[in-house]
Length: 519
Image (cartoon, rainbow, N blue to C red; front, side, top):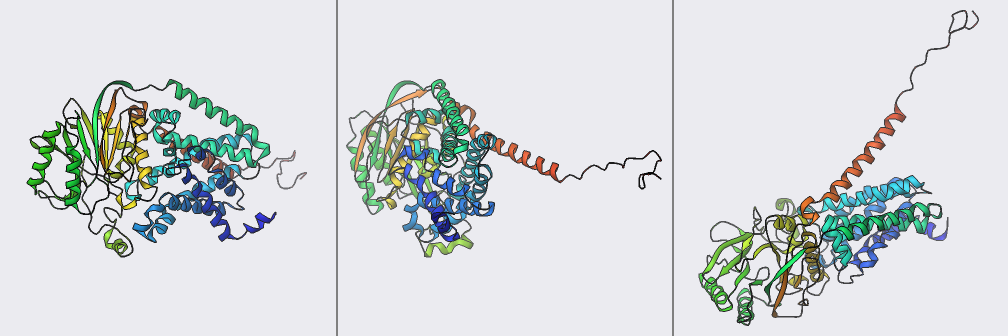
């Protein structure tokens, strides 16, 4: 065993190395945005796992790497969650323990051509299984899905229209697995290269033959970003001022950010009248976001509310998927103590029950989402199915201004636009605000976290249905099928090995005595 191998003999040292290796893919996401790094970022982690002396140790390496990835991906939550982020990282990191065992099973020692080929299908499938589980809203949602690191790569966005962000994750893990074999196992380089060539051929074909959005017409959308302002009254006054600047700019819709109105408009008709006056002055409906206790039902809601020249239009969307700990505490009776160690929600907000498509005039239908709902591919896909021509996410990242969170959040809209073939507006209180066309390409400039401004975007509209909208999360279903077939094969081989040998009657001699030949 070499010197480094001796050093890794310590379980704690090995776990630390695994955690660091697991955190490396974070560099592919904003703010670093080293998108190309995603295709090799898993290689050190895979190489470490395949060297594990036992399957149990490989599972620990997977767990430690998953912990490093989750903490690294969400490190900007540390001021809000305090030490609790490490507890969450440890719990969610455990999802990678079975994946670690899978890596060792397929790639330990000198894998045969068959094992290498199987690894390029099973290991990405196992990774998608992890992303599927942790995408549940109660576990924090699909923030940091590996494929979303490719938000600014045009060919990758084209593939997202075919299989969503899930297809990108599958391909990235497959490339990493092949690269790890190329680096660590000389004897298995041929099947690894063959796997890379096959992956490139399939993705190139999908890229060439995937349908492009049919563009036609444009809409003028204004984004109002007031910046970091303390107090709902002062924030409203700044939004009012910025909106008034949009008069005579012929906009079709004005979008304010999440929590842009801190009072229920049914309880504050004076504010509703002021917004209606702005709508009449600018000639456009205004989509605000109310974060307040409802006057018509109990509880606090975050709601996208449409206001026209005549006042409230009646179109309202109540946020369905709330941020764990940020907007509610799961099992508050057991975990309510976290409010004493971080900035967890003091009172649970209420969630809505259905998505809404709003007709905002000018023949334009929009589908609103709130905050981290833009991370969920299924929500934007359902809005596109329901006829939304423009997707909108109202967000606020004011608690994380100096972190990577604002850029990470804004980048998600590019994936949602490409997946659905519908342009998307990401409007925030404090930045980053951004607009993307139906191919996921940026329209105009981002509004950074240091800006307090309003800006108008000419957004190209598009028609048609992408394969992802038509067929849904088929890469996830395919991955689960691959895992099921592999597990069934393993169980079948195990049963065959443990089955008792068939009883063979002894050979009789010429005298007919099986026990005493010759008698």
